[in-house]
Amino acid sequence: MADSFASTDDLEKRWRPLTEAERDTAEVLLEDASVEVRSALARSGVTVVDADAAKLVVCGMVKRSMIAGDTAAGVTTTQETTGPFSRSFTYSNPTGDLYMTKREKQLLGLGLQTAFTIPMGSVDG
Image (cartoon, rainbow, N blue to C red):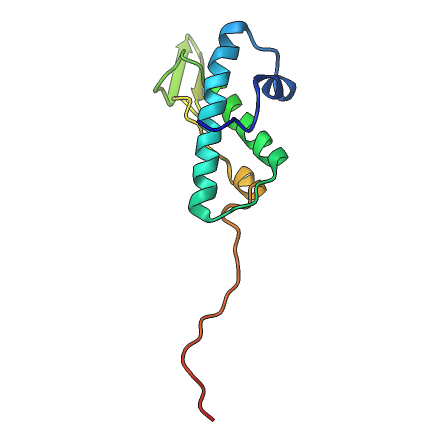
């Protein structure tokens, strides 16, 4: 497996200190997120990668995944009611998936619009 775009130290600088168990999990997720970024870049034909942008994107992906945790795996909405009071929650990433936001894709140069022309035929004069 290729090197990760970011380290656990990079993740901690952008988020919070991690426990030793979280560092182990983060290390694997950083590698997985890096694979996903490399794959997306390859599919789009992007050959030059800004290392700082890739580091930022990978850390964001892992942070979202780790925030999800294991407490509500698979749950998208929950509601609690006690007497006249109620509250509900909708989880943004209940399964802890690694994904890139639209802004992160833009940082990497993915999905940008380009202009081109298509010759429709020859012009005989």
